[in-house]
Amino acid sequence: MAEAKTVFTRLRRSISHPPVRPGTEKKRAWAAYENLILHIHPRKVPLASLTFTLTWGLGGMCAVLFFLLAASGMLLLFVYEPFPEKAYQSVLTLQNEVLFGQLVRNIHYWSANFLILAAFLHLLRVFYTGAFHSVRQFNWVIGVFLFTGIILSNFTGYLLPWDQLSYWAVTISTGMTEYIPLVGGWFQTTLQGSDDTGSHTLMIFFTLHTTVLPGAMVTLMAYHFWRIRKAGGVVLPPSHGQTGQPPMVDTLPNLAVREAVTALILLAVLLIVSVAFNAPLGEMANPGLSPNPAKAPWYFMGFQELLLHVHPSFAVCFIPAALFLLCLILPYFRYDHPSGDHEPPSGIWFVSTRGKRAGIIAAITAGLFVPAAIVINEYAPGFSGWFPGLPPIVTDGIVPTGMACAAIAVFYRLIKTRVASVNTETTLALFTLAVVSFALLTLTGVWFRGEGMGLVQPFWPLISGD
Image (cartoon, rainbow, N blue to C red; front, side, top):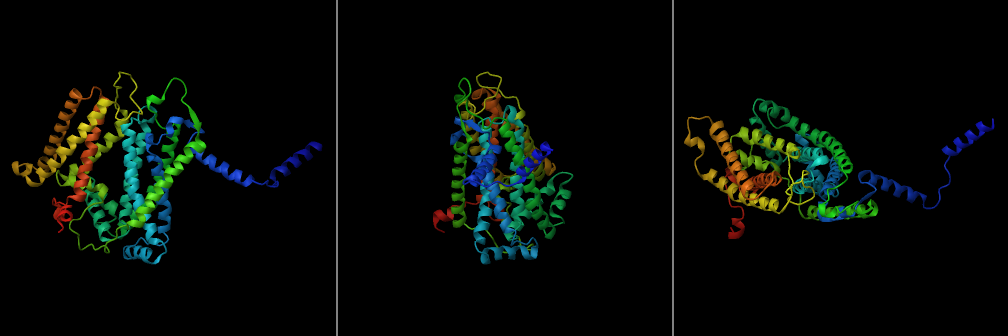
């Protein structure tokens, strides 16, 4: 009986609420915050990992921008209506009649563009510091899919204002998919929901933008962060890896404060840009009147520019698919250390002095040959004029692509024999060549294409005063 009474007393005490001592609530709130931080980071981190230039805070910036996009997007949903006859007017209502509506839309727009740039720079940082080797190989693959998700999220959100700019940009982009062999027509119809861009397209893009893609990206982000922690955090340069365990410091407050300061500076810059520059909004979409030139979103302009120089099947399908697959398998190539070690170098910018030199040569090579090829292709007769009897896929696809591959092979051979000694350095040079080439194609499409997608000099009116 006494034992039963004791058990009952303990149970009653366990479900009762004892008086809260002063300061207990603050301690509980701090404990919850501490647990949140320590779920993302370990309790202690290497002192060397606190150096800002090690990662430039790019991964954290991507996370901040993503959740800012989610928060601002939720606010926009209170006003936005995803129907062609109401979408444009709802954006006008948001900008002109809702308190701080214009600011919220600006923040959402600029956050999306900042996120593309931050994610791209983060990808470059991981590659050029060799932070994708060993246990981090699959995390690189996850990062590539996350970056793809960011591009798709921007693309699906681009149509939602339903103005001339967004309508025709999406029409051009979805029209490119028609050139995918075998399934191009089906894929375009599925993406648009009908034979052209209309109400079904808007609803599909709205659903993807607000539900499917955010859900997938949150899942991938959580897995991405978890694998980073399981791999031991960020990769440290070998100079920090003296004998024994490197010096460790508490995550709180050392790392958490630095992350908070970086996030606040990012938010301040984003707010300044959002106050100074409004998100673009043209006239309401008019399916019967195409602007000249009709361009894809800026992050797809590299492919639209490529479409002007090679056969559409190569520009839209074969070349992008090959580049995407190469990015996925990039960590699984065999890499050598310049010193002869079996383990590939990690944490060293550009691998070595020779790797840095190879990368600079690759960037200069792309900077010289890509603009020259664009100008020559613009004004010189193409291969179709030289070989009128051959089909376009040969003269405009196989021939120029084969010549480009041959040029890359020659470049690889020269770099391998004259500059780089191991395949790690040559891979870095080829990656740099591809990145700079695509960047130049994008800049050409954005700034140097005018009416009829002809080459123009965009800064000449500013210089001449016309």
